[in-house]
Amino acid sequence: MSDLADLNVGEAATGLRAGDFSSVELTDAVIKRAGITESHLHAYLTFDQDAARDAARVADDARAGGEDRGPLHGIPIALKDNMTTRGTETTAGSKILAGYVPPYDAAVVERLQSRHAVILGKTNLDEYAMGSSTENSAYGPTRNPWDTERIPGGSSGGSAAAVAVGSAMAALGSDTGGSIRQPAAMCGIVGVKPTYGLVSRYGLIAFASSLDQIGPFARTVADAASLLEVIAEFDIRDATSYRGERPAFSQALEEGVAGMRVGVVTELSGDGIDAEVAAACRAMYDSLANAGAEVSEVSLPASEYALSAYYLIAPAEASANLARFDGVRYGLRVGGATTEEMMARTRAEGFGPEVTRRILLGTYALSAGYYDAFYGQAQKVRTLVRRDFAAAYEKVDVLVSPTSPTTAFPIGERTADPLSMYYADVCTIASNLAGDPSGSVPIGLDNQGLPIGFQIMAPALHEANLFRAAAEVERLATFSHRPALATSEVRPA
Image (cartoon, rainbow, N blue to C red):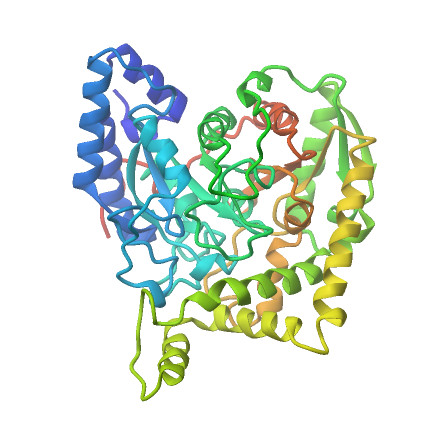
């Protein structure tokens, strides 16, 4: 039998149902893989082997008793460490939350546990999900399994790296401006940001509340669809949770793209896109046309200003959301002569430079005399972006583009240049501003052997269109590459 850690979720679920192996055996294989790869990658902040094995035994016992709770029953899954887990430390990658153990589970954690999924641990991230490289973590960077001298993307880089290398079979991340899709692209896996409100944000430590959304990482489009079907449920504890029906996304996977209208986003196809990335995407546009799709160019004029608008709206919301981390109720507390001094010292020592930068930027944008000029203008641009998407979807069923303008760049290359770092999300941010679903599918490698991601965007609540197109892209790309670290031959460093 090949290494069980190399199976995708669908394959593992089939094997578990057939009795070819147990969840304990599957979990042990993934734990063994993590034991080999973690010294190279640092994908996890918390990895609880004992709790995972206990959960796997519970899953096996339930199956032995006749239970089958779906495709995630007994499957080892990782969680980004900005989702609360009762009894397990949750840090959001920040020093200010070191040692914080939540008294409750996030809604998505409850959903996974109700299906007997096996929670492996909590993955590394840019502090408070603010970053595009997972270099901003207070606990050190995560490295890319394809080249450990390069970044894995961010902010959900730990989740992406774990799935790519086999130290998790699937994972959850959060996406505020590209933080699922961009690391998925850079690590050669599938990542999906659902429609805003489709997945409950209860228990997600907020960065920018009008933009944050939880979504799946997986090795296949079908696995991502299965995971999203489990976590997408109305939740009364989240005021923005969608109350309507949630379709079975996996039903669209075999429909193909014949007759489907596919729009290539003009503004995301030219200047600023690496030549190899652009060439790979152009080849996929042609392949989709040959498969029967109606491919045409579509313009989103306001997307040119999306990056600027995002970096006013998101920091403004972060400024408000992070005000609660003050040393009074939980987390780090640095002493001071007065309460005000204690709060100031706690925040100064607890927040890293990128979080501090965004809090200051957001506070300034919301301040008297500047609100209309900055935050107010950014919200007007957001409205224009939404209108552009709405107009585009009157002409096409999905929009496509590169996921990231480049493949994974070297660790440290952009840390001294925030604007260059922010540009890594130029292709992904617009769909967050619009609130629409989008995903990334790997389509090839560049000449350095680094994965290239292909982005598919769809109208709000039309995840079925996204998965229909994504499944065809996956079939056409036939991407079967795995990083060298995802082999049992690799030994600990």
